Image (cartoon, rainbow, N blue to C red):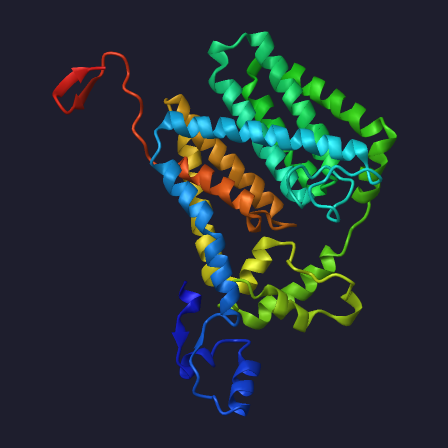
Length: 371
């Protein structure tokens, strides 16, 4: 919002990267025009509007009781599982008979309900985190053998669905729910580790269909070139950035001819780098503050005596970790569904009263009474 506030020419012309704009306005007799911090205000408005669903979800979740928040995590695990199953079917059908909602996007890969393989991989990892945490939360109500089998099966299917996306970093972040399951399994950790390692080996070594994944894993792509040109843009507009949504026009002015391809680089494929371009040091400082807040709250809640608060804190911390890791090579929070999931996870960190324990006195409208 601050980037959209009109500023007098004595201010905005001093911002880095504004020389061409100032010269163009002077050439048409508008040297005294007020301009915003952002060089592309429409992009800033679009970015602001895109935040609304996540903000609304975060506020609504923050007002919910703990049990309701946990139910939302369970629904997220279910919906993520459905998307994973759709993705596996898409991968099995292959390029010739794609079962995709998006005809020409990542054709033949397991993208589920998304148009992007990386977003699907993140959702699978988050759904697995939710499932593992829920199984641990309700372990006393479940048959131990059935619970272990359910967790192992979910992790195996998640690994299959993750591989089917063809997302290299997406497959890497699947180690987060696997590590969580091993950490929470206690004495059963060695057996679970061996079973998952054996299943992963069979998946990676068997089946000719996985040759497609192997071939793509060996393709470095053009991210390195994009990062190099994006870094130059970030230096040109440092330290305040050029405004949210301004990456594409700025990148096109800095892209070296030897890196130009048939498609436009719509993202920097490193969200920290893109945030430096669009928001500069203020945006990076804000991001650092948010990550620090989440880390502290998740760490404090990791062993909270209340099982629901403990689950929500662990879920929020691990969801943030998934996004933070994947953002080094992609842009997970620029997908609205994943941004909304982040809002759900962050809303779960809001303070909420614990359920009254047996024998504890609670204050009601008619005075004190025993719970």
